[in-house]
Length: 120
Image (cartoon, rainbow, N blue to C red; front, side):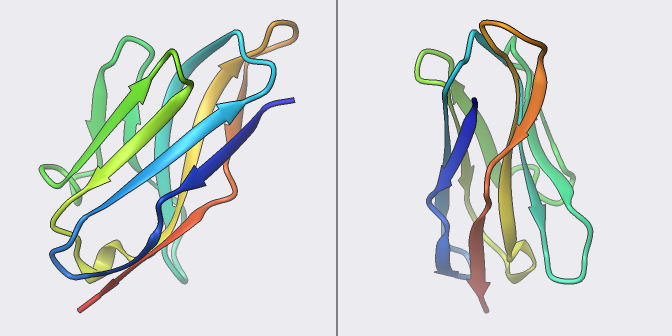
């Protein structure tokens, strides 16, 4: 069974920085695409940043130039470095990963979410 655990959320003032981390554990043969999503109160979940298995990245327009996604293949982790945070970045952030297990099919997995609050 695969589990994703996020950490690093919290409360920060506008203009501040936070680093989110997501660690995958369990029956993992290969991690494929990974990403961070967020869901603000009353809004749908949206993609924030994505990193493919070959390291290509893409970002939501609203975070380009401020956020950076990275991954450590050996450690099965993905991180999101968030700079110049704005109140509109306030949301619960979720880690997502497509994981191929040692046996079975490739599935997308979600973490439990970590809350980020940016005060004005």
